[in-house]
Length: 70
Image 1: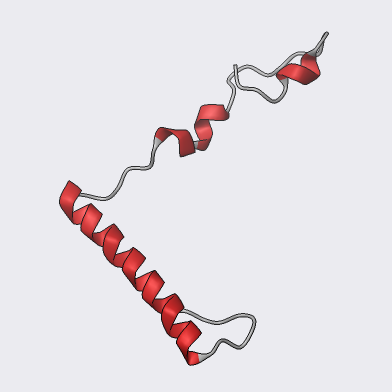
Image 2: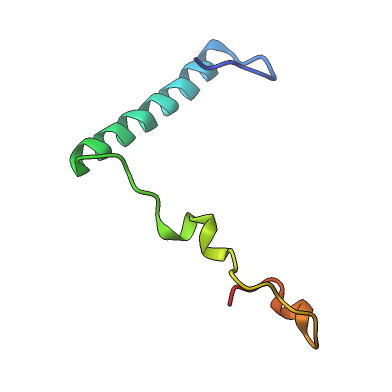
């Protein structure tokens, strides 16, 4: 079910948006059927890859090391 939260779309605009959503769902289903199972997310999108096992210790240039993964 799709619900319009803001605005007042015309019937043509709503039909166009629904066509895009339906086409995307059909493409995802077709890709899943070809591969034989559900799609596996890529490794780059895994949030655990940026989690660190060791916490940063304060010291010189600690602020520079606080953002970039080791």
